[in-house]
Length: 186
Image (cartoon, rainbow, N blue to C red):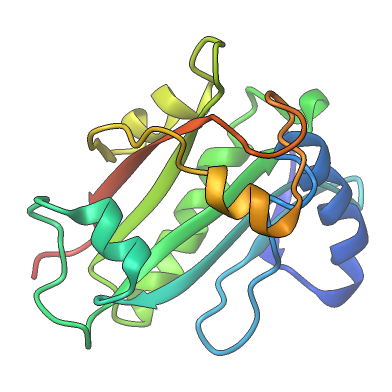
């Protein structure tokens, strides 16, 4: 599939937001802004066909510590930056064409240029349903799976009122599987 990968722009946000709502669920994502933001879109025929929301987190961030606990990729100090792949979504009609891989690679490459040596993501494990495509995707992209975290989204879903696409009204009972990757030798 012929697509252009470029940084997410303000004008992309409505279409990217709809895609994320449909894929992840309203309230379970937010755009990342500021100096650490590393978000990109895949455009096909000038339409948003995919989006990755990512950012650089300090090594002592709670999400970094949770995902990378016991991993050889864990940062040695809070001063180190780690790529957090917050959300990755591709429109159903554009799937299986390599867009997710290209979006992830773009975020990883940019994170490396900004000094990150590791990356992590939380794979969503829908409560009572089979594992989604994201689970084997991260493994194929070189990420190491860490132990699952039960009810990972429950607290945030209650706090924000987010409707899980699998559980419905809060609390969300879905688990998360952390995935970590060494981007560059430490």
